[in-house]
Every structure is written in C-alpha cells, then in structure tokens.
Amino acid sequence: MRQSFKTNKLERLQNTLTSAPIFPTIWRLALPNIFAMTASALVTIAETWYVGQLGLLPLAGMALVFPVVMLQQMLSAGSMGGGISSAVSRALGAKDLVKANALVLHATIISLGIGLFFTFIFVFFSRLIFTAIGGQGEALEHCLAYANIAFLGAVSIWLTNSFTSVLRGTGNMRTPSQVLLTVCLVQVALSGILGLGLGPVPAFGMAGVAAGTVTAYSASAIYLFFYLRSSRSLLKLSFNSPLSQTLFIDILKVGGISSLSSLQTVATIVVVTSLMSSFGPEALAAYGIGTRLEFLLVPITFAFGVACLSMVGMALGANMAQRAKQVAWSGALLSSVLVGCIGLLVSFWPGIWTEIFTSNPVVLSYTELYFKWVGPCYGFFALGLCLYFASQGAGKLLGPVLAGTFRFIVVAAGGIWLTQNNGSAVEMFSLIAAGMVCFGLLTALAVYKVSWAR
Image (tube, rainbow, N blue to C red; front, side, top):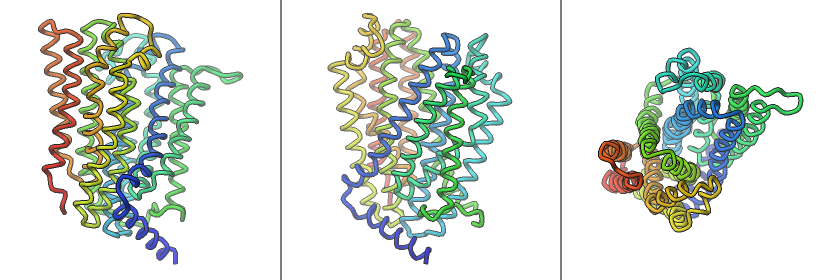
C-alpha cells in the first residue's frame, strides 16, 4: 500500500514538473532556496564579523582558510550536490523509483568518503597546506585553530549537502530550505557564543567559531538522515540496496566535471585578489566591497539554477528534451533579469552599498569605478551560472566548464599583463567585467548548440 502511495505521489510530481507552466513553477521552486542561500551568505558575513572582534591576526588567519572552506561548500553543495540532484531527477523522470532510491545510498557513500578524505587531509596536513598558501606566524596559528575544528566535522557538511541535494532532485525545495535556514540560525548563535564568550561560557576564539559551524551541520545531518529513513520522504535511504558501479558513475560523471568548475571559481578569486593587491590597498578594498555584493547575488542565481536542474532532469528522464531547453532558458532569463537589475542599480547609485562598509573617499571612488564597469555585467554572469546548473540536470557540462576556463584565462592572463605593463585598477575592473560577459555568452552558446536529446 505504501509503495502504491509513493508511486501515485511520483506521478503527481512528474506531472507537475513536466507539464505545469514553466515560469510559475520555477518561481515556486526557487523562492525557498533564495531565502536559504541568502541566509547562508549572511552567515559568512556574521562569522567574519565575529573573527574581526578577536583581532587583526585572527582575521588574517580567517583570510587564509576561507577559500578552502568556500571550496568545500561549493564542491559538496554545487558540484557533487548537482550530480546527485541530476541523477535522482532523471531517474524519477523515467518513473524508475527503484533506481532513485538506490541512488540515495550511493550519494551517501560518496559524500561520506569525500568528507572523511577532507578530514584526513586538513587535520593531519593542515600546517603544511596553509604554510604553502602563505600562512606564517601567529596568523597561521589562528588559521589552524579554526581549520582543525572545522574540517574535523567535514563529514557533517558533506552529508547535509548530499541529503538536501537528494531532496531537491525530487522537486522538494521546502524541506532543504527549512533545514538550511535553521542551520544558519544555530550557526550564528553558537559561533558567536563559543567564539566570543557569553556569561559563564568562555571565549574559545577561532576554535569556538568553527565549533558553532560543526555543531549546526552535525545536527542537520542527523535530522536529514532520519527524515530520509522516514515515510515522509518520497525516497528512502535504505542500506539493503545493492551497490552498483553504474549508479556511482551516474553521480560522479556530473559531480566530477562540476568540481572542475568549482576549482576554477576559487582559483579565479584567489588570482584576482592577488593581482588587485598590486594596484594598492584602496583598489583592493574596493574589489573586496564589490565581491561582498556578488557573494550575496550568487545565491539568487543558485536558487533559480537548482530549480531548473530538477525540472530539466525530470523532463529529460521523461524524454522531453524540448521542454528541458525551455526550462533552462526561462530560468536563465529570470535570473539574469533579476541579478542584472541589481547590477544596474549599484552601477548608477553605488553608494547604497559601498557606504555601508567605508567612508574613505579614495576607496569610495575606486568602488564607484568598479561598479560602473562590473555592475552592468552581473546579468551575463547570472545567465551563465543558471545555464550551468541547468546543464548539470542534463548531464551536458563540457561547454559551461570550458566557458569558465576561458573566463579564468582571460582574467588571469590579462591581469598579469596589466601588472607587468603599468596597467591601472580601472583596466583591471574592465577585464573582470569582460570575463563575466565571456562566461555568460559562451555558456549560452554551448547550451544552444548542444543537443540534450537522449
């Protein structure tokens, strides 16, 4: 009887995602994710504020570890998470409930293995890694105090993002969003209390800030584990499912290629930050203020992207390639227009954002120039990023990944040339803008040209 109920639920789900009007469905799926992902971005800002209260050297230590922490989140939620959602949605689109259920166990094993690998690498070799990045002295010690706790709980982060990706693959965006919002609230509270101290609770510094994150994600992983074992979930985590090399490959072929894109993104940030430092502290500060806004805009695009991912996967599982492309273009249009309007707003009135962070007239001047060049190009970046997530649903990622590679080459090679030929910060800003335009247009061209038919 329960199997019959789930079969009927699957048919209703498939009918909703493969036949309902596209624009309203994307909005309905994206809205919960917008709140959850924006909250996650705000948590990062709050965590940075906590560390800032500890002093300059802890803040420098946080700067060392932050790219690696961000990389882990991108790999677990966006890359491997995209591979999981893609495989699950395509199986459900084909009405193969047995395969979809088996994929849950395979996704769990993959995430558990990678999480343990991160723990092993960064607990036993963290000093070597962060020294190679450039850490030294007391700043390095603060970095290690954070990293040794944060990566000790890497498994909880990987499992949480794996379980939420399974649910998103079924079209269930509400439960993952509610869980992640709760994680954000708990993380903000515990990181502040354990890091800075409150009442009888002593201040544990960097280790305390990291412990708040680990505790919040550990609780969410446990909750989602039992949720996927319960009758409330369309799919069930069962340890009786036979393991299959084919199902591992089904997840990893998308998640693996997507991981290259995440590595490119982090590499681009690291390279541009290094290059911007050569134009002076004011220009670097302006770039930092600009990227803070971009860090809040990316979750909006992610929300539309994962909505498209599940709809595209479901449509292709049902052999509806034309609808899959329509979903991709519709989501990309919505994302591009919304993010593009925000970009145009700050390009005309940069003060509404920049004056939150500084009153230094030189920094404000550089930031105004940054938004004048880069702001109008945010829409192109959102276009490319949303189509990238839709391509995850289709399992056709080569074009978007190559577009990201081209962007990295343009920005890195052009930036190096500028620093060696007395270029200006404004020219670097224009180069960053050109990279965004190239990424958006080349990704769109790839999606247009590549057939998604099975």
